[in-house]
Amino acid sequence: AQKVTQAQTEISVVEKEDVTLDCVYETRDTTYYLFWYKQPPSGELVFLIRRNSFDEQNEISGRYSWNFQKSTSSFNFTITASQVVDSAVYFCALLIQDYKLSFGAGTTVTVRA
Amino acid sequence: GAVVSQHPSWVICKSGTSVKIECRSLDFQATTMFWYRQFPKQSLMLMATSNEGSKATYEQGVEKDKFLINHASLTLSTLTVTSAHPEDSSFYICSARVSSNYGYTFGSGTRLTVV
Image (cartoon, rainbow over all chains, first blue to last red):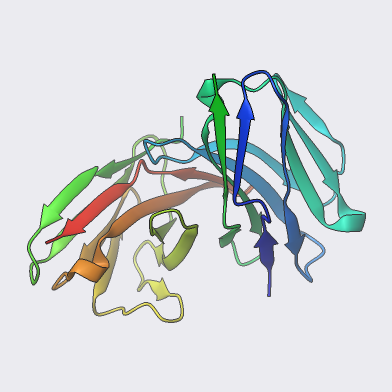
């Protein structure tokens, strides 16, 4: 069975600090997809990134970057120069061939001004 | 594109009554939709998968007679919480597969409070 672990429950930083969110996944499938979503206080889920299991290239999008390492089954997410608007709950999720997303427990990020 | 509209965004109902939550795909056809439940400060738990024109598939532990799912068209899936009780109070979110490349889009969620 697949599983996603986000060991960090809460992270609090001061504005402009960098913050890295850890995500470790488990699956026996060789083909899978990994996602990161942001859930602000309003509740809706905001899609951030999707990565398939055959693409280990790291990605940068503005202040966001992702580090995918199959060798350690990790898909970590870094916010550079954090801002108050980054305060939210961030979920890592795994998708295998059954099309069902498995979410991690989420990490609450609080950015203080 | 690929927007899912979920209504209502919040609802308060009395114990014993039923509540219907709607999810509509606005600019695409959603053959498969997913319903999640999220308790405060917890993760999203998949409740069921709904396929257009067929019966929904429920996850283990989810009462199908209590959470009725209907997916009668390619653009609409509904979740009805029947005989609601305070323990059903939660945040419910729907999601739809956008395309075969594993894109997913989520509704804005419905906060249900049963009093």
